[in-house]
Length: 587
Image 1 (tube, rainbow, N blue to C red):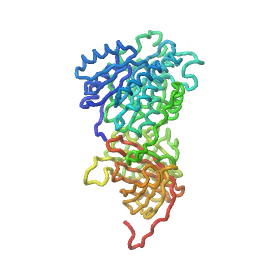
Image 2 (cartoon, rainbow, N blue to C red):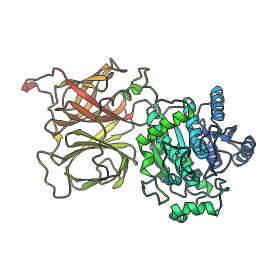
Image 3 (cartoon, helix red, strand yellow):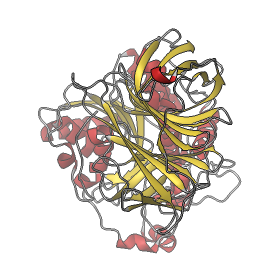
Image 4 (cartoon, one colour):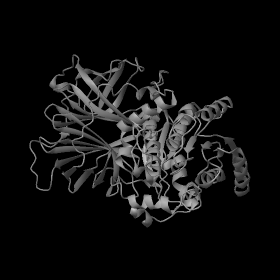
């Protein structure tokens, strides 16, 4: 896991973002790389040693771009190929040639696009902007996924725009066959589709080492994207987003910075499905009149899957999610089959604030937004800043007990669970940090446990505070994660448990790992373990009355692979346990 941190801003340049990175041996494909932002991104990547394949609709323009780039970066390795994203036949032919040539890619930058054009149709009858900006890239990326090296570094970056705020994807009439054509609405729809495609792609391929990001570069000087538009066309845009005049324009060098940041920067390792602008995650902003930030609707995984299905129907090809690995490798196998019996996500906390009064002193606060994130303050992790943002997963793991899983945007070497019991007004916070593996440590993980009261200052909780417990010692049970995957657990003492895989791709595997057991309330426990042979830590809430677990594993199950967050949940099937005489009870 990388320890590189990033502190870039809206005026950072592509060269500044890439400074100190060695990209020798890596190959990137950039669509629309013969001019503007794509060409600047190609130059900057090649200057750091990368091989860059750039595409252009016009072969002569592509060759002219090569001459310019070779003059700007004499040591760079460039190649130009012809590709018309408005033609599905051209996309298919391009992909066949790439596959036949055996090109191995480390990333794809979907940069090509057209903006607010007159009404026109592609050769397949698609509205031109939707067909070129989205459907062409949808087909291209899916057909080239087999070429991506999947060792935890492969990324797909789709270029969106602040204009995604102008229109959602119309799932019924995306091609303006029944509704009046509007150039800005069509452009906004295509940019929303670019974002939703990346969200769905990341969800489907993240466990295979391919991550996807969305980038809005800002308003850029020096491109030819808008040369066909006149003042009357921009007057329509300004009427919808008057504050756009307040946005500061960027140079090409600054505009390409977020693109290459998303494509290669190690500080994003283990992340994906995010909308980036100004070299950071874009803030949520659901006001369509305002010109910046990201609309929560383009991060909606349900809408993303609907756009994926629509796109498959329109291009006439299906691209299903990859099947779980069946090669028996322990690291790859861990990520499959663990969420079939997981309880559904809860929307209870959306738009709400959770206050926590820490028993050791101080307070914390989680402000949940309407999407998949929250702002936090005062969380007691491992050297966390005072406040920050995080991706969040919330499940009601037991009646009135919420499993709140947080992945801070920075630093990324740790994750936090808040198990909040609204019945007793008690909570347990578990911070898990991944450290470099050393010979002296059994596991590369450390965990910190802190108790809190749920509510504003002065809230009076009920019952005892969460505390370590030996109540599970000696218990033996099957944990059935789906119809193919089951594990047996035996809890040896307060510090260790042992397991064996009864069914699934790891059948026959067995081991013993460090563990911790905390009682939240009667019949509800927080159970964690830190694996010894594989770089994985787990945190679960057990509801013993319902015989149900809710949790997650987190770490790098495949050596050298990506940092993964793996949701999980199981049905508990009790087996015969063990009892001990008092004088010989385990510790």
